[in-house]
Image 1 (cartoon, rainbow, N blue to C red):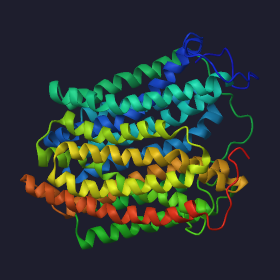
Image 2: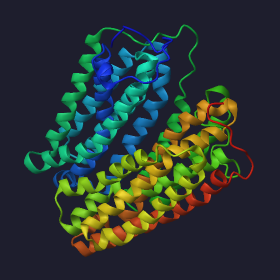
Image 3: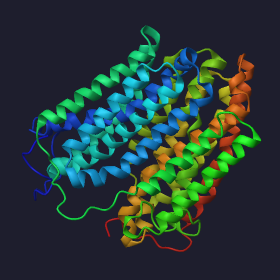
Image 4: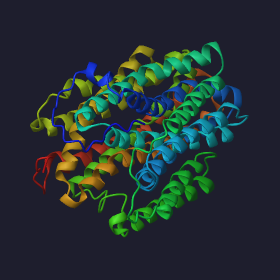
Length: 482
């Protein structure tokens, strides 16, 4: 990474032409960060596109939800570890290690003879991809001069949108013209190239910490990961004697994690009383958790169900899922110029649209037509895109002054936790409703109805939790810049 400057430079010029930025010595560093973000951003959509073909070849239908849950577990752990690692060792060594982990995870998935082996690779991909994403944003703040940071973030955000379009195309290409195994190998090659590039750059752009870094929250994160695994384990073979104790144990571990974290003082991962409905910040985090759980079904199980019911190609199924990301990006751009006074309206409208999209999936996935499923996917993403910036801004503005940084870090963690728990929960519902014995399109349609019906309660919880955030019953918002 380049050592020609730091973000501490006192350059207050706000507008930098793209030509100047891309022609500067920082262009190579931008390309490196963009490649790191691309690996993480495109991975889930590519795997979702390839998943139907994977299940046909190596089986493991009962473990489909684990593909999302294990990846998100790895991302949560890596995100929590990234700040500590970069503080202690700088950027170069941890970031190259994250890229290598991602690459090894892809190789394991590429050669896997069974679904459990593939899922081992997915867990490593989550660790590597989550680390690359977190450290990529750390790199933006550390490497680029202040005058270039806005352009760097814009480039990364644009790449995220591009990955939503390109990801399914890449996955569909390998399924249609080669094999899904080559899809994993393709990403492994990119990851190892990134790791080598980082090492050869030969510069640790983040200063190492000279003080005592906070202790890594191993016990708390272990409880959190175990909670998700136990819930997912309850869905492998659904029965009262197996599923109920497993889910109950998972909930106990989750409560244990929250209890320990609340007592961790300055090393807390989450803000105080993170899901207390009476507090706007707690309500916001509960809303994010619930809505994430409610909307993961189309990503985790959508391609599998759509191909079984409607007989579409892997590429088509992948683009149906991608419509959500595309809708999110487009709508976020359209509302980006709205002033802050519209935050309550946009949050309420966006979350209502997301809830209606789930009802749309409940009808369109089992009944079709395929284009209608894509429309509702775009509507779902559009609802999030409409509200997300305002959710972030309002939640941070309503946080206590000493909790602002912790709340900012907790929002993406809670979102990933919702995806992981949601995929595990939907896996239980799908397997209980007959996913493992599907033989006809009608059987798959029945499963899809149960899957999306099961998402509605969490969307309702999300709407209820939205109330204190939007109505602000107890707290007056302060400017974000405060």
